[in-house]
Length: 334
Ligand code: SF4
Image (cartoon, rainbow, N blue to C red; front, side, top):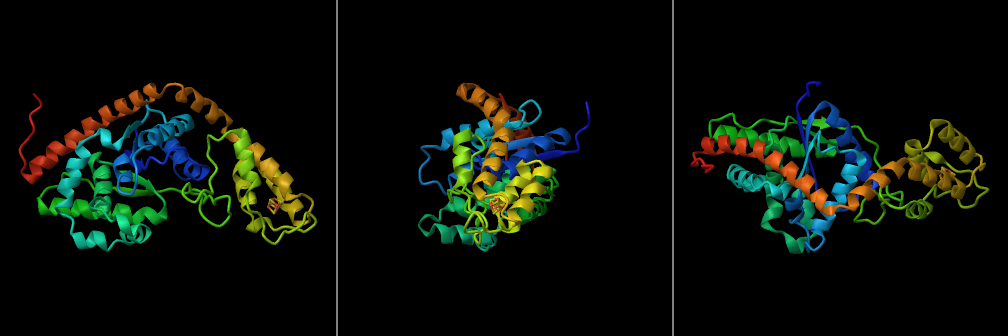
C-alpha cells in the first residue's frame, strides 16, 4: 500500500444536486486527491444554517449532494465522507476557538460584510462566527492541507491565525497550521455566459440531469452576442459554448469548430447539439451509478454515519488535547 502524503480536509455546503461548475471546481479534484492523500470530505450542514430561511430540504439536499459525490467516484473506503453535524466535537471546538478570536476581526472580514449586504435582515450570531466554525472543521481533523481556489486562500490564513492565537494563548502546540493546496480548475460560466455557474442564479446545468434536460439547457446557452444570423461569422473566443467544448469535446473537433465558427461553416444550433451529446456521454456513467445510490437512501445515510464514526475518532483525539491545553476537565468515557 502506498504511503499517503498527508491529510486533506474539505467541506462543502449541502446545496443539493451538483452542477458542472461544482464538478470541475471541486468534486473531480476530490476524487483525484484520494489517491495521494488521506481525505476527509464533509458536508457542512451547520454552516448552511447561517443563511437558510428554512431547513425543510436540508436532509434531502445532503442526500442529493452525497449521491453526486459518490457517483463521481468519491470512495468512502478510501476517504472519510460525512456530515458536519454528526460529529459534535466541532461545535465544542468552535466555542473554544471563538474565545481567542477578536470580534472586530470577524466583522471586518469582506465575506461577512458581503453577507450583511446580501441579507441585512438576517445578520445572526452564527454568521459572524462562520470563519471560526470553518477553522474548527479544519483544525479538529488536523488537516495538513485544504484544497482551495486562489480566492479562498484568506480562509486558510484565518485558520492559521486562529491556530497561532490559540497556541499562544494556551502556551501549547496542539493545533496544527494547515496549508492551502491550490487547485487548478477551469472557471465554469453559467448558461447566461456572464456569471459563474451557480444554482442561486439559475444558470446551471446539473451533472445528474437527464440527457434531454442537459440538451435543453445547452440550447439556452448564450453564444457570441455579435453573431445574429446563421450566415454571420462567429468568434469562439467570446463564446461560452466553445469554452465548454474545450472540456467535453475531443481536441480535433474543437479545432474544427474553431475554424468553422469563424467562417460561418457551422451554426450555433448544431454546435450546441454536439456539445450536449458530448456532455451527456461524459456524464452517462456517473448518472448510472447515481441511480443505484438513489435507490437506497438508508444505505447512503449509513455511509455518512460510518464516515462520521471514523471522523469522530480523530475529532475526540484532538479535543482531548485541546481540553487539556485549555484547562478543562477530561471527559471520562465510561
Ligand atoms: Fe459559439 Fe459554436 Fe456558435 Fe461559434 S458556432 S458562436 S462556438 S455556439
